[in-house]
Image 1: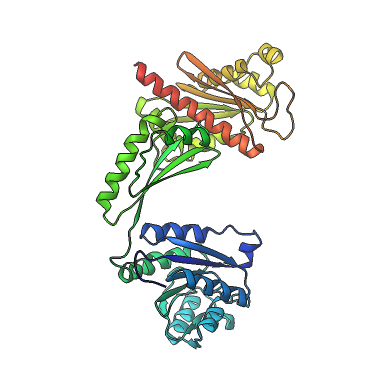
Image 2 (image 1 turned 60 degrees about the vertical axis):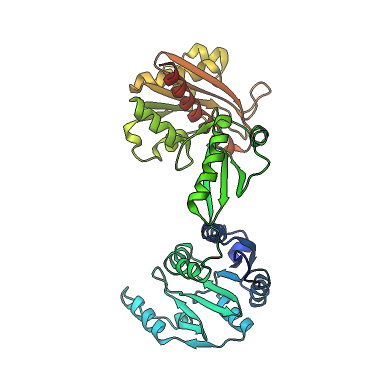
Length: 425
């Protein structure tokens, strides 16, 4: 591979559990992000099973497109852990017993009250000429091999072990090896909720400059909303931040109606912060979300400062007895209705002594829908002092998606309502 310009990396993830869909490949995503932050873009990702010739084919192909190859998985002590043998054979290297590694393994097991199994002896074998990268979180070390101008790293597949070796050893090695050639990618995230990706893209695209310089903009949708990731590839961090700020200042007025600030990307962080700053508290009444709203709020640290409690009112009698919902309102409008949602929100706030209340009532499916109120029909409501506001949602997706989206809309409704109240104050 050419050594002109920024270095490029390729990843090879190994394991039958990956290609069978039994395990999500988090290692590739984490490595791509970690390498990108160092200014080393990943250009190809290969995933193969625990088959020697398939591992060799993937590593060989990776070496053709990148001068840095990272292989994860298949370094354990069991017969299906074939990565080390496959790569050594591919590169024409013999495996040799490393006595220092073997002594370390014996000490590792003895300190935990176990004897070293003969199966683990293979973990002390390394390809000739390899640099051993100690694994402080497990038994399989990382290994660095050089083939011409290409670096090949073999890493354990256990995520915490892989990340430990990368952070403790690889990062420094890569910075030293590619000093002066990397252009780190700097990111900034803007968070929105309540606007579809297509509509957001349409609004934003109208205001983007033709010349973006070193900037790129990505739209990252999920059931809770759409994040905008601004990226700048610059050798100088200060220059990158200037570019990021320039585009962020351009975008903020466009997305203000749907935007929120949260380091975690979760609107509950923004909501809890706003409640705390205002001296407000919140209580929730849930039907179809079954406690998800309460979980979202209490997932945030220090939620006890603002969250008083919640009532899961699945049955109509619970809505009536615990929240004070009118029996007549349910009879005339149904449990999934504006009037019931409003009474739930005001009722839970009053009964728990909160200054604000949130309520959700709807049809999450897969059954229970009607022509008038099909699956995905949800009413959310918020109460704030003497006022109550409700919103009708027509949500799509399966049961889980509908519940997630319903909770997100309810949280966003209160967050916007608090912001509006502040503007009027």
